[in-house]
Image (cartoon, rainbow, N blue to C red; front, side, top):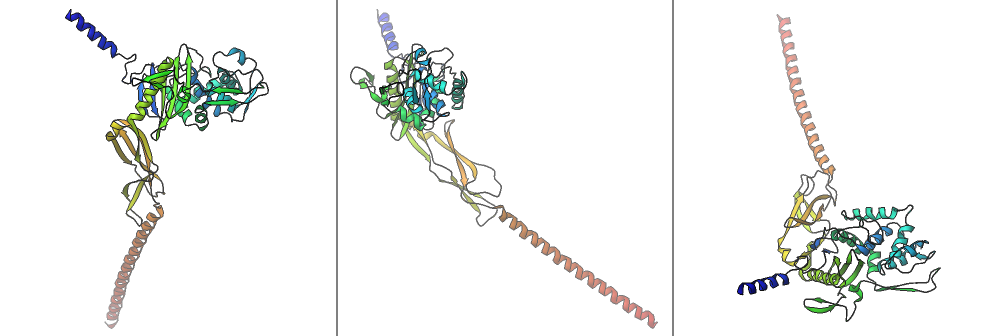
Length: 425
C-alpha cells in the first residue's frame, strides 16, 4: 500500500511539473523567441529553428517587399478573380476597385486581409510568381535563410514554411521600418469611399495586445487574471490557420528599450499568455547597458613623426545592448588595434573594441584617429637627413680636394727645386 501511495505521489509530482514543450518559462506554444528590438539579439528561445507554418505572419514580409517596389500614393487596381478566389480574412475588395497602397497596407496589416495581399502581389508583378520570388530574396537578405514562401498571405501550403528565428529577422526589419511600425501600432483605420464602394470601411486591429478584450477573454499570468492588452505594446501581427494554429508576433517598449516576441502554434489564449510571459521575462530581468560612449577615449598609440609622439584613439560611435541583469558582470571588453602606416587621416579606422559575454560577441565599435598625421612630415625628415648627408659628402669632398691640391702643390715645388739643382750642376 505504501509503495502504491508513493508511486501515485511521484506520478502526480512529475505530471504537475511537466510543461508541454519543457522550457523554464512554462510556455505552451511549439516555438517561441524573444529578441532585442534594436540589435536583434536573441534573449530567449524555445525551438526557434523548428520548421513551422507562419499563417498571416507572412504579411509582414509582404509589406516589406512591396515597400521596396512602390510608394504609399500608388494606385492599385483589384483584378476580377481575387475577390472570389481568396478565402479567410478579407476587407471585401471588389473587381475594378482602386485603392492607394497606403490603404492596402493598412488593410493588410491591421485587418489581415488575404484579398489585399493577393492584389498587392498581382499589382507588383510583371509575370506570375515574380512577387513571391522577391519575397524570398528579401527574406534571405534579412537572414531568414530557413524559409520558403509561396504566397503573399500565408494561407496554408506545405511548401510555405519558416522558423520562429527567421520570423524574428523579418519582424525586426518591420519594427524598424517607419511605415510598417506606424501601421501595426494603430488600433483602427478608416478606408474612405472608392470608385466602387460608396461607403467607408472601418477596420479594427486583430492584435489584442493593443486593443484588449475586457472581461471574458482574459489570461492567467502569475496565477492571476489579466487582460490580453499589454502595457507598452506597439505592434505587430496575428495569424491563424488550422495547420499553423494561432500565431503572434508582439512588440513592446518599456524601461528605455524595446522587445519583439514570436510565438507559434497554440490556441488563442496560449499565444497571448506566452507573449506576456516572454515580454515580462525580457523587461523584468534585462536592462539596456551603455557599453561605450560616442567619441570615448580608448588609448594612445606611438607614432614615429610629427609634433606629437602619440596619437589618441577614440570610439567612432556609442554602443549599447539589452543584457540580462545577472550577466552584466560577465561582459568582457577586447581592444584590437590594426597595423597602420603613415599617412593617417583624421577619423581613420585603426581598430575595433569588441564586447563579449562568454563566447558570444555582443558587437563591436570602430576605433578611429583623432587627428591627421601626414606623410609629408616623414618626407621632410627624410629630406633633411638626405641634405645633411649631401653636405657632409661635399665637405669631405672639399677636404679631399684640398689635400690633393696640397699634395700636387708640394710635388710641383719639389720638381721646381730639383730642376734648379740640375741647372746649377
